Image 1 (cartoon, rainbow, N blue to C red):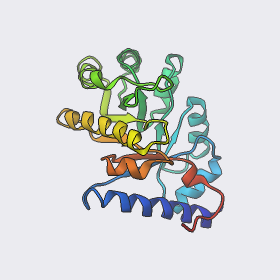
Image 2 (cartoon, rainbow, N blue to C red):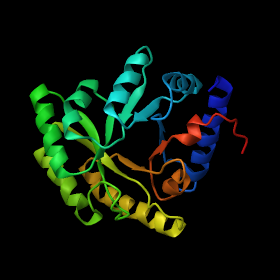
Image 3 (tube, rainbow, N blue to C red):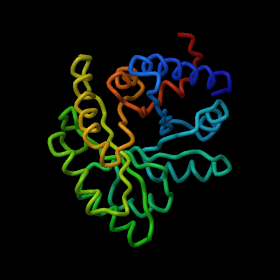
Image 4 (cartoon, rainbow, N blue to C red):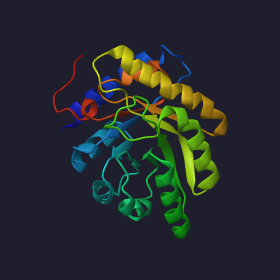
Length: 231
């Protein structure tokens, strides 16, 4: 991907984000995470030079490789994939800015135990399965607030920064919107407990997610497309 393509892709995403966030409020700020799991380190570097600063990987080994290859750039790295227990120590050593996929109290306790052993802390989001889909990870909405509070109490080495969910995997926009609204309602309940991010929305639905209150989106294909975008 060349610099011209990267700049146009990023400008296109920012324009759409601006349009969506202004429907909420001119004070509503949205953070863009570039999901780079299918992209090369060179493409990440090109997008960085175009102005994108935060990138997310879904495999620990890929995150490690790209962090090493791009060590000269002050990139904000996020881990967005399912965290396997046998990979926890490796991820802790990489010290990502944010883990998006803390999907159970059990995983949180295990992560906290490993963090305590290394005398470290990591920031994370609680993943919520707001669409009630068997193919998705995450705690169910009806127990999300309770689980969040339990992690705060039992896992002092995990710095909870909010919640994350993936919109319903359907064509019906109303159903997708309802899944986002479910997560946003939970987020609102958790703001008094330190929740900062309501991470919802990916390449296909981030505008809808923002209008439902998302303040962090995960965009991959829209940013890393090879063709110039004029729409």
